[in-house]
Image (cartoon, rainbow, N blue to C red):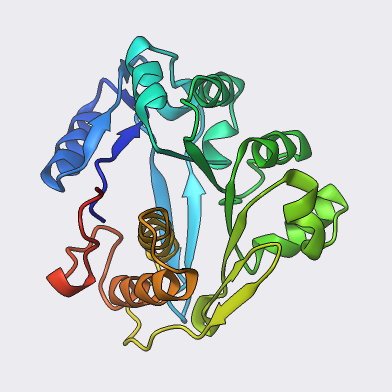
Length: 252
């Protein structure tokens, strides 16, 4: 999407760890992933008849033990945006690493929390702490009522309760909403021939937030993000090579 981005995680000293490290590098993604004594994480993805994805994760794997490191803290202190989720916080070790890295960010660095509720790998404490740490909240239409019930807060009060600037709400085939204290930009999904939805929310979020942080108006950034997500949905898998007209100009 035009940003200089680094993914930080952990892999095992096994064939899958070596395979994913090479595959990510082949995609042109900067990856920092210490090799640990735990196995590399695996997720089984099944698709419903409508193309929606369901995920089943293995337990006690390398990304449950992401270590604090000088390299991670250097990345955190230089970043203009830090994005993190709830899934990696299912273990205390990785949760502490994430929030320590957030505490070391520079002044002006923005934080995006992608709530990504999976199975039972979340708690009220984790969600509450993460919402207090972020500027932008990403979630989908299925996750919103769960969060409201979990935190006993009305959806219209989430932003003010946690001092969040924007809620990025994806609505599946119905489109998306970008919600701030003063406006709600709702947009229909861009048309596509659906193959699967894996990676659609992530690509939407990445495109929107990078365009927005580069100064693009909300509706324009939302439209661009919708077109990118539609293209990803029309292809199999999450790592799709975008055509030039959908790529974001490099960050200034």
